[in-house]
Image (cartoon, rainbow, N blue to C red; front, top):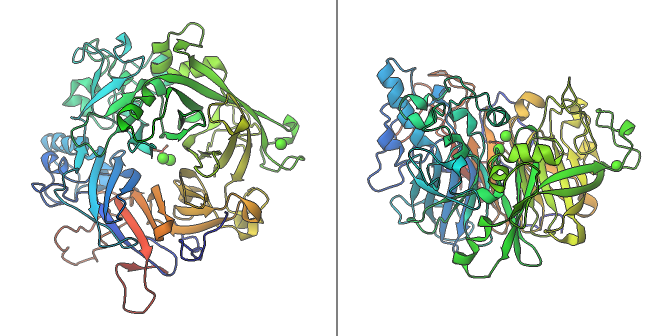
Length: 612
Ligand code: FEO
Ligand code: CA
Ligand code: CA
Ligand code: CA
């Protein structure tokens, strides 16, 4: 274990790409193609994408915007696949040729934006394993989930007064999902999706401790959806609880196009980046989830009931009932050695012990003065009371299937150790943490249900060549690819960690990318860059099919710093200036899912775009 065997996604790392460059780069011997782009028609009756003549009705039948979490499920013969993707949010200023001219046009665009978020499920096909996929327009399982899709609330808070609105007096059914960022696939074949920055979509009272803790404000929202749909104006009694119905982990069965997706209140309500499940030795399902906000927390859920192999119907109930915990970390080194500079403590590592503090245990609240329903709806306030450790923005949290160790991407925290904010500690050891770090957790007795653990930092990210204080578990820093702002995580079949990044341009000055990191043996901590995304883009949803030498990424918000007609990216269609775009292409950036594959290196035998 520790490095790829030849033929299994072997590659020579690419050089980092300057942040002004608008290309997608892959290693030599590999090519890439977009698999699905914003606006691609998913159904037989879907209109073709027309950048100049968009409509809400068309967008509801097309691939959505800002693809983030990505999963590609394969049938055993390798010829049919199923793609599931999150559409987190929109970038209005680059989605149209010009600014809206009238109020009516503004309102029409709001309808398009509403249908551009949510989820997509799309069938894939190909001739043989290891070759690029095509998506199948009009396939039986294709599905768009939008703000009009009905979701069922499960768990102890379902039916709670805190979740009732005039439109849903039972507090059991919600229309739509919001801010779907990262996610995870369950061992039983469903997909989880995290509702992250839902707060910004609501105009709320904005003064209660709960509203303030969740960033719910009273100003009109940037999206302005409250103008057409009063449920986004949560200032009145009719809709006051509507924001309480977002901020959950969503579970979707992509193999049943009629299934009602669910929001699991048992996993708590916060800015869920995503959630990832592992089955503990005793058969319980354990889900790890981070709250991506500066100084927020890391959580773990342990199911009451046990996983049953080949019983999807039963397994789909596992996340409805169980215990919820939040993490407290303690360091092994004297506080004086953690000076905020990032220098390694005298004992040779950033490490220590930790406790999973109960919030809900055995169906009862473990937090004084809060009911179970309150803990699950106002989870951040419960975790505050429990005394959890304030983290540097936990993004993906993912157990390694090969070892059970859990990896936490702390993306950055520019406020760490400043003013009255939380000081540095051994698990968040850098002041004004610009480049982020990765925490590695080993549950006691290697039991995923344990309430205590040990931890250490796998790496402090940055660019050693620019003098950043970095740490790569002792691996020589001059031999690693520079890396900043870790966000999404994945593992290959050899147990290597893959990290995609979001925010590198403003830190180390390079485009975001995808990186492989060895975790075991002499190469532990060796970071190698596999891919780089176009200008202003974020690398999301990595899927690593190393046994086929294939990699998939969702390129989110390419060209986001551009404006109407003045683009900073033309990915992925790259229509040249002055050229007439071919049908279905556009001279503007489009968030897209990209597939990377082995390419014959013979000249002229290119299928797709060459690596360099
Ligand atoms: Fe949507 Fe935490 O990234
Ligand atoms: Ca230490
Ligand atoms: Ca993210
Ligand atoms: Ca991020």
